[in-house]
Image (cartoon, rainbow, N blue to C red; front, side, top):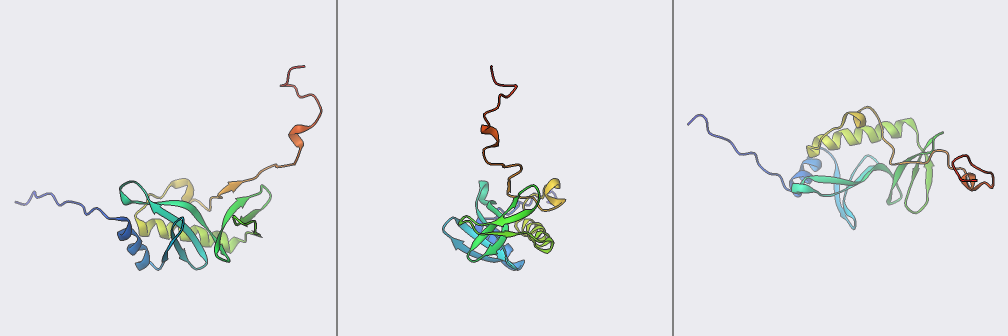
Length: 145
């Protein structure tokens, strides 16, 4: 019959990773999941619901063998690794991360969100972090007298 329903093929996590390989990404198994890398930008993915890849460590710059997470300090963006290394972010690196994310979402058939498609989204936000500012001995209006 011509009304025959064609079943969609359910892709496994490995099928998604092989699609990423054909799109030019390097895929390696690591301790915390699967590391996906291209042109000095990397992220970590794990299998999610229905074997759809779930990004557990957002894309960042490769610094040594670690991934530098994009951190917004309010006045400037930085890349910081878990071991404490820090490096100021440059415009071409932010553009490279944005392109990496868009290409990876397309390769893995992931949903592309509008707000993330507008530009690079930071992993951490550290605005207005003055040490000891909230512990000042002065009386504050919201505290009882």
